[in-house]
Each structure stands twice: as structure tokens, then as C-alpha cells.
Image (cartoon, rainbow, N blue to C red; front, top):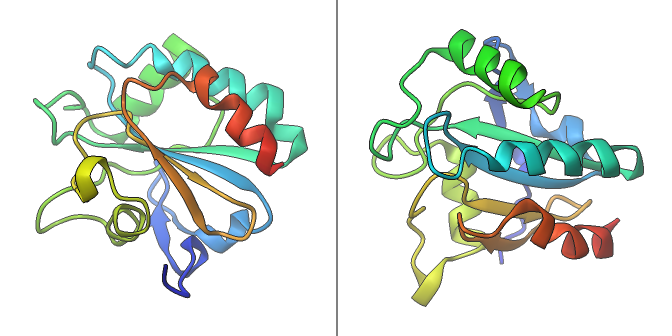
Length: 161
């Protein structure tokens, strides 16, 4: 594990403003690459529930739309924001669309993948709704597969709160 934390990174929010992840210092985070037209898209509901129920205890979900998997998030940031809000009541922070694999991988996801490798040591994000759990010190604790439902991660989150 490196000395770096997620607080060393920043990303544009869904409105285009640069946000330092240091703004989330002291919070337990679940960082998720999302998509609006994916079989796992209903997980937005579970993510929102976690955000609502654990938010006042120092927990935050951060959503990062990604269109790299079968073009399942083709809209622009405005369309993505409206979709999440209208269909799932998403009130947790959503960020601008990013890449999680390949040459254009966002620096934050490059770091997350290195800190919490996937199956058999793979760094590649396999699909939408891969989740990274980060402790209140900005250290990456664990990676969860897209199939891991938000409610299944709740106990791990609560241990860190």
C-alpha cells in the first residue's frame, strides 16, 4: 500500500466544478462507477438508501458515471443527473463522466484499482457498479464486484463508521 490517499485526488462534479476529494476527509466513502442503462442500474436505489441511512454517521456515496461498458451511459452530464434524480432520487454526489480503464483512466480510478485489486490480482474494472470502500483516513479498504448489492456492503461500512 502506498502513502497516498484518495485525498490526493480531485475530480469534476456532474456540474463541471473541480472538487478535491480532501473535502470528504473523515468520512467513510463508497466510490462507484455508475451507468444509467445497465442491468445493475437499479443499484442506485440501494446506494441512495445507504446514503440516506448512514449519511449522518459520516458516510458518503460518490458516483462516477462511465460509458466504457457497452455504451451504457451515453448521455451527457445533464441527462445523467436528471435520470438519477428522477428515477432514483439520488442525492449523493455525482461526478462528471470518466474512464475507469485504458489510457484515459481517471487518476482516482488508477489509484483505486492499484490499492484494491480485483480477482486474481487484476486491476481492470470489469463492469459498471464496481465499488470501492474507503475508510475515514482516505485508505482504500476493499473492492466489490458489480454483483455485490449495496445492502450486502452495509455491515462492512458500519464497521468503519
